[in-house]
Length: 173
Image 1 (cartoon, rainbow, N blue to C red):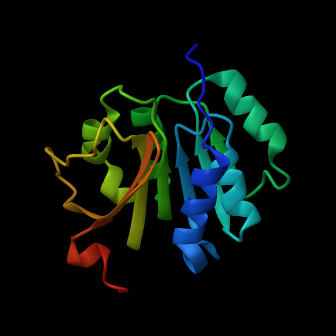
Image 2 (image 1 turned 90 degrees about the vertical axis):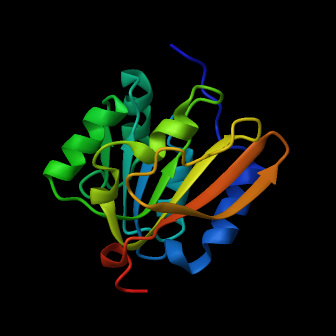
């Protein structure tokens, strides 16, 4: 089992400051949830619901224990691709998709290209990837027509903000 690297307080504060009012009433997807700290903070700040995806069973169980209202929130202990398929089959859509994959693991290039990812986006959805500043998000393979709208560095950590360029996915903007 790999060690977890929880989002630092500084990065978490910056993330939610940048998201601002977008979090209020949001449907929040927390990929590579680890401790669930980011998704739980999203709920505390007004997200309508959070779905946590954490492949390590005991970490997923810890997140479940930390949820007060587990009826509307979901914790999936599945590999990321299987979790996305599960969510798509249930026609779940998200306002904010947050991902904090293991650093320097290749996810920065493969995550934005995962099959079914765009099917999870509500119109105007925002995706945020927390990653090592040494491993940039490149969008080399970009089947979902995502665009990087902003990048912020906090020491070794970078937050990359992406949105879809597909007009049908952004019709509410």
